[in-house]
Image (cartoon, rainbow, N blue to C red; front, side, top):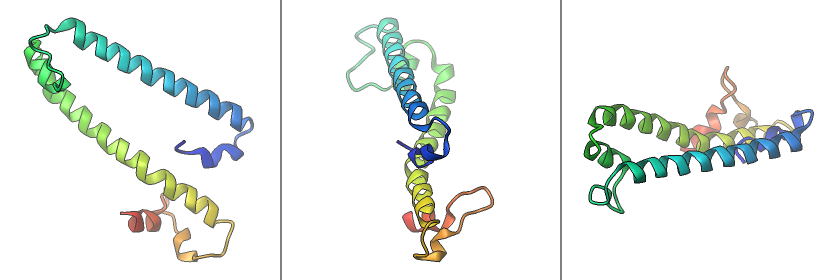
Length: 123
């Protein structure tokens, strides 16, 4: 979904993209399943409330020393998630605008290929 605009540039685009999406869905499912099972099986029902988050459960399990690094990784992941929602529409729009002469100031990209004008407008 995120970078589907590049499918036409790949030699076997549709098949590769479909395979990548299926593999990503499988990996996410397995990671969520394993994570949920580990938390459920390693904690007692009294420490695991329905609304408890992983950072609340870790100290109850005697793993408070990994709670701070885990919170840092969750924060970094949040930035990555935000970029996954902000960047693809702008990249897709730049690809479409390259084939037209409409609004040439929106065509600007940085030296890294980031559509800076569109991201500034989007934010």
